[in-house]
Amino acid sequence: MKIALINENSQAAKNEIILTALKKTVEPMGHTVDNYGMYAADDEAQLTYVQCGILGAILLNSGAADYVITGCGTGEGAMLAMNSFPGVICGHIEEAVDAYTFAHVNDGNAVAIPFAKGFGWGGELNLEYIFEKLFGFGHGQGYPPERVEPEMRNKRILDEVRTKTMRPLLDGLKDLDQELVRGAVAGKQFEELFFAGCKDASIAEYVKSLRK
Image (cartoon, rainbow, N blue to C red; front, side, top):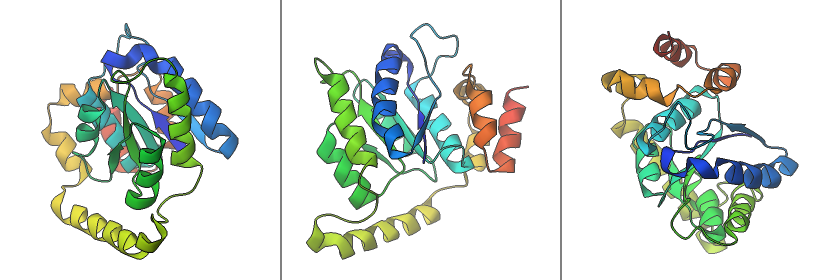
């Protein structure tokens, strides 16, 4: 699995802490990590939590990433932004139990973590526990055992509902302020990471048009 890390501006200074915890936990499992930044608080390319949602949706819908790790001060804004787009099911995760149950009950492809609220001494350990439960035990198997069948059925229903209520990604992106979208893909390592993994030619062409 290719996992993308995205940090918004208020918590950009924690990028290295989050990246280290993520790679330490998931690389031994066979997963890879792409760090899309922000890499530091003073990065030239500044990402708001809304732009994290835009970038995350582009990565997931294009196949450039299989999973997105993002967040903000509380995690709420990043979660709402991610869930504004098709092809994204993002959970709000504060601890390891949240991570495990989200993986098995909701079977999403993104999480938003609070990187300020409650993030104190031992914060990096909490991240490691979250990532272990999120990626170390499979996905979509249901929980608890007696609820496996209805939970898996509910997930299929949710997927169907979202196909009916959400617009295609490019239709939505092209209706947004293009400077807002352009800023979401302006990171210094974006081009190197994204185009190597992108599997959707139409999304790739649109992103190229933003970077001209």
